[in-house]
Image (spheres, rainbow, N blue to C red):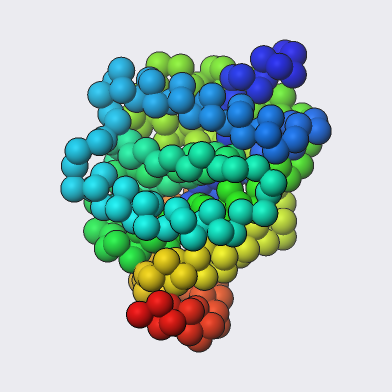
Length: 261
């Protein structure tokens, strides 16, 4: 498959529960990567509309969008990529407990993560900050190897078109399982997104303690045997590890948060 066609056809995403890292597209610069991601994102939106799974009216959508709009200016202040982000957020009707971001600031939430976990605005902000930092630090440009890149194109081509709402989540989970990098690298990116997201939500005026309650809720889902979350146990920090790391960062984050009050 030619490089140009590969760019046009792939979905580039990092997920909350298993943040996928994608190759740097054999030298693609940020502008090219962001453009490709925007094209794939728009394709996803078109298909979601056709399947009537794009949520634009529910209380869940309004909550996610409200948090997104409040955090966006603060995310822009942190952008050091040299590229202006056209931030967008979409909410997909699906029971999947998931959220992801594509390069250039294309954020997607599934209703399942908000509704199943009964997330507050502050907890949504913890997820939003996490995903925004993945985009701002361009984690999707980290190399995972040419073979993974080829396999990713095949995976997208065979699984993306014609999937149901649940299928979108399944696709992303497959990407995370097959193309995530080794443990230290993957966990490092997750830790960076957790820390950066915590500070970002605090700057936007959201209570950082919600990041801890978020992962406590994730723990509760794990204890019920939720396969979506358990799928990434071996490649990403455990919920307990994340909570412990966030607790260490909490004094700094609370100082930032209180300065906004």
